[in-house]
Length: 502
Ligand SMILES: Nc1ncnc2c1ncn2[C@@H]1O[C@H](COP(=O)(O)OP(=O)(O)OP(=O)(O)O)[C@@H](O)[C@H]1O
Ligand SMILES: [Mg+2]
Image (cartoon, rainbow, N blue to C red):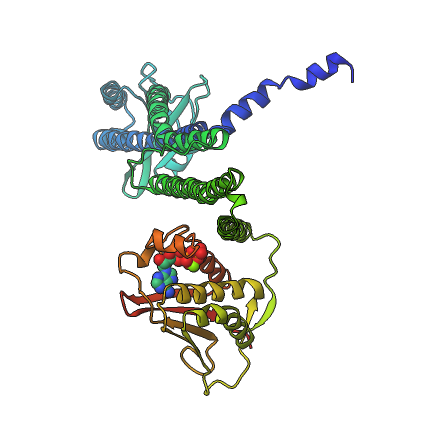
């Protein structure tokens, strides 16, 4: 593409810019919506008001013209019946008086439609122009009061006429027509229109300010959240929250946003603690290995007894280090959930037997009795869907703890039952020991990573405090649950709940 063409297409048009300015800002959208709504509402109200005022004014005027015509009729009805110059003069005088009183034009015609008197003309001594062809006069001559609105023949002005029939002995003896130019009303309406436009403009300006304030009030907290979210996305800094000082939906959004940040803060704290603990736990045996190797190199290797002792402790340290690294790998694998198959059909009886076989030797060493108590009421194969190796790992951890934290000659009972009714799908595995027990203050923490109630004793037994954390993760990943009851000095019981499949 040539350069100039490229530049041309890259420059957005004014329309595109305005569109973007309007729709890329919530505040602008609110502002314009309010403005359009308020302007439309004002215009509709003004139009309706003007139409009503006009109709009302014409109605008022018509009524007053009617009253004037009736009054004049009462005054001249006798003279209408007479056909004398004197009577004509009286009619003319009355006509002029009433016309000037109201500022209107009055025309009096005889029963045939000839003008007898007209407030705008001189006295007619003989019969004047015949107006019977004009609609209102024609209808009034027929005895019906008539109203018409039209342009007068002599001018382009709009006139309102009320023609009133004067009647005597059941006959129409003449018609009084009162007319007024509507220019006054139109002028008044024009003035009203200007006032309405002024009010619309003032309201428009006030609306701009109110809308700006409202739009800012709505968009400011959202803008704050957006800015903070951007900051977190770019720098990962989750030290700040947004101020929340309102109780509406936006306030709720702000609170949820802050809750999310606080959760991230907690997770970040846990992550940092985990890294610090893991580094510390890795460092301790590594340094110990270094010291033993140093001692061997410094000469201990030449003493047979010392050499054997040091190599034994090296072996223990390496085993501990390997176990710790394996635990850390397991934790990260469980966290990431990658490479784990969750669809094994795990036979619970096989699982428990394998785990018991695994721990048997250690238990025998401490003369601890391992009692697997089969439940005679359950005669079906109990199967759980999940990962066999991980479930084995979980049971192994609990049994290993039971052996580790139970003194010589103690006892460990392993039993299971189906919770609730026969058809219930929940398996409960109970592992109870007669060991040292766990203090009530430690119980809520024993599933935390690296938590040990007695660090010295746990370390002596090679524990790092990850076993129960891993067990908890595994059971949760199988949609199960793990709880514990314990009494210092008398022992500990773990309950594992797992959903069974048929
Ligand atoms: N059966 C038990 N009797 C008494 N205390 C127990 C028992 N099981 C666990 N604990 C306590 O809970 C703590 C956490 O147990 P966990 O299995 O997580 O760690 P650990 O046994 O110390 O180390 P490892 O990571 O090797 O398992 C133990 O250090 C111990 O203090
Ligand atoms: Mg353990």
